[in-house]
Image 1 (tube, rainbow, N blue to C red):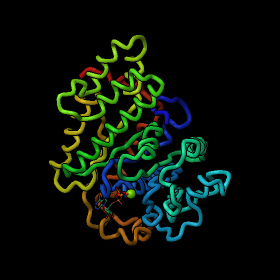
Image 2 (cartoon, rainbow, N blue to C red):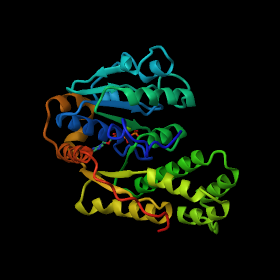
Image 3 (cartoon, rainbow, N blue to C red):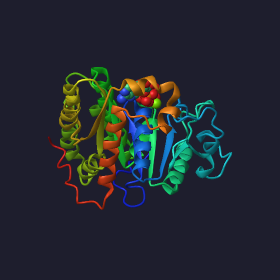
Length: 323
Ligand SMILES: Nc1ncnc2c1ncn2[C@@H]1O[C@H](COP(=O)(O)OP(=O)(O)OP(=O)(O)O)[C@@H](O)[C@H]1O
Ligand SMILES: [Mg+2]
């Protein structure tokens, strides 16, 4: 699936993917809380449960038995995506429920994904947030690559940092594999770069860029444009101590050195007992607008997102892939 990061126009501010590799780091909570905050900031929001193997966003959003799910759209039981979009207890927040009830739904075919993306692009909403599943399946990575805005959620735990980096790396190499899918020479080098084998000289995107030199015209530029198209932002969730916020510097530095990616911080959210205790009754939590520290953090992050949506100042290019 094509990386849509550089595509101009209609979906630029609209489509956001929320991934992170590791299970339980708070991707669904981040999706929900950002969605609610964006709605309070005046945006019409649609949340999409794109965790096709283990959907549960509807439960968090206070919907017990979804009438329709993404499966109805993917299987063409309905013609348009609007028909599977439902209201939530929160004003201006709609939801497209996930589809883990049908065998094989976790891996929709290329044509099914393309149809889904085409409908999402046209969906009437100011912001669409895609809640991705854990892991690095092609489907999850494809959703991540398709969205022009990519958020990676991690917690301060080292395992989460490792998985978040693995997720980002999988995105980079999937993007390169797609961009060079008809170029066997380039694919051979990309494969060498993607596997971590001790002693392999192509151990970074910068080295891959150098190796591409011998392949001739245009290859290095295409590689550069893949990397430039990946604009990734981090949210560190479940922070218990101020110093834990710095965990993002580790991942940013490793991504810079090995993937030639410039990653930005989008914000942090505290570990919040009120939120944790409300998980079995989020509907109550959401509609009564209970004060919570994490809620304030997510509102601040959403405010920054809205500020960033204002007519773009020209963003500095990430620079050459060489570190
Ligand atoms: N900021 C927070 N403070 C306290 N608890 C949190 C916070 N964020 C998430 N949680 C807790 O972590 C649990 C996992 O969150 P969530 O389901 O959003 O993770 P996930 O990354 O979507 O998991 P999965 O990969 O299984 O989809 C939630 O049940 C919630 O209790
Ligand atoms: Mg989830």
